[in-house]
Length: 227
Picture: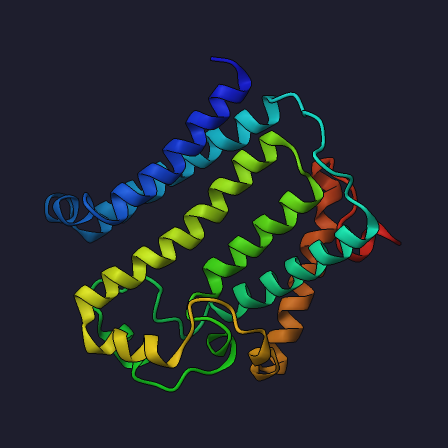
């Protein structure tokens, strides 16, 4: 199997295994292995498939760029990754979309009025991954990048949609009430409702992440591109 075919296969495994384990296979596997056993298997499959993706991506010969990543594109990409970092950091606390086998915490959280990043979108973590992916496709517009990063973007957004359907079936009115108060698509007009503390932590996280690019052999990202 050549490098590009290996990358496609790895991405297909990564995306496909997530959907299979999150939906049709979850209930029977939890019944046989228990919740902890299932989460261990889920994590192992995700780690192995993601590792294969990264390995295959490094082996693929970089193809031609479909467009030139100008400074204007870099500015847009940098702003997208900054927003992604803020949404991700804000999603780590008080997020009813995070795993909760019994649903008690979800019902409690979903009953509350949304605040912070949840005013922007009810899936801030997944939109953080998606915006990160879009930004990287903008600055690395190659076939291998589209396959790798596009798989992550697709999984984040399609997975969020599937999660809404699963939560509706499992939690009924508790989740539909949360859906009525929130938006799937990010509402940029609500960015001002994000807490200053989350804005600060997210910005620091973004600065560290973009600074760390050079350690992996990539060009400077974010503000470091111009420093």
